[in-house]
Amino acid sequence: MSRRERWSILGAILLALEEELQRGEEARLSNVATRANLPYDRLVAYLTKLQAGGLLTEDKPPRITEKGREFLRHYRQWVSVLDRFGVDQL
Amino acid sequence: MVPSPFLLVGLDLVSLLLEVVVAAFFLQTWRRTGNATHLLFAIGFFLLALGTGAVSSSALDLLRNVETWDGLRMGGQTGGALVLFFSYASMRRGGHANILRVAAATIAFAASLMVILYVFVPPFLEVPSLESMAVVADAVQFLAYAGCVAFASITYRRVPQPEYLLVPGAFMLLALSKYTWVLIDLSHAINLVGFVYVWRILALGLLLGALLLPRRPRPEASREPA
Image (cartoon, rainbow over all chains, first blue to last red; front, side, top):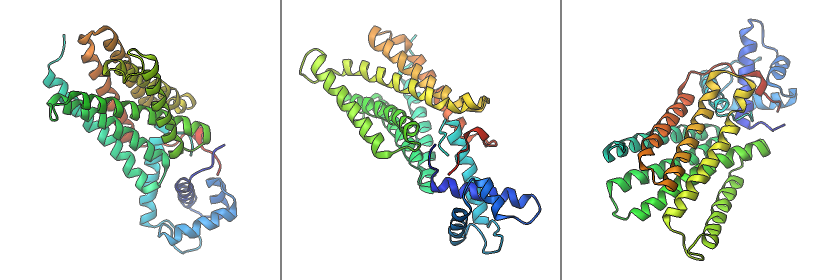
């Protein structure tokens, strides 16, 4: 089993948060951690980094900023391309 | 029938452009992600572009030293194919592509090949002729691309959707182009040259398609925990 790289983890968290927010209810961080396949304490540490980078708001629960959405759009394209290249590391 | 030299130079320039576009895509992506896989693919495709550029430049006779350009072509194309192959091999072995490991494997393999050619190919203990080096370089590239086909087809084997055939198909066509070169090197059947260009342009078209196609939902089978 391979260790995921940082950009892949950040993308997975944003993706999980977006999916959780789309459910219409208030996003629960425990659900985000499950969706992103991360322990809760690591999720919290990464959320702080994402907020510091301007990809998430400081709200509780956090929301995805425009910069975060832009990253997510690129992340989806990168993952698609790597999958097409058979790079199965993420 | 052998295509006109002008057509071949034109096709080389198209190949060069496509290879640079693919390399630039991975370079730009690496700048955002810092992911070694992206950087290694960028280096691999830039080396291929360097080799193709040498072919075009040789045909345009800019330097008037065809041997230098041929050496550059062989070095670039063999180096590019080996970098791509060892990048895949590194990912399969360690989960991540390791730049130092890939560079070491590529250099060690190329150096070993040169030593073997120097010692075992007549005239012995002399720098081998470009002709004998070309056969070996094309055969090595054929094997490297064949290996890339096996590695790149892993997503298709898990999720059999047509879009996951683009890259394996591209590597298969690149392997076919090198196999055709080996046939040309050995039999001097110069009338096969046109096929090499067809395979290569088709391969690069498929690679470009793999980069530019709209994204689809990611297959669940390839997700892994942190």
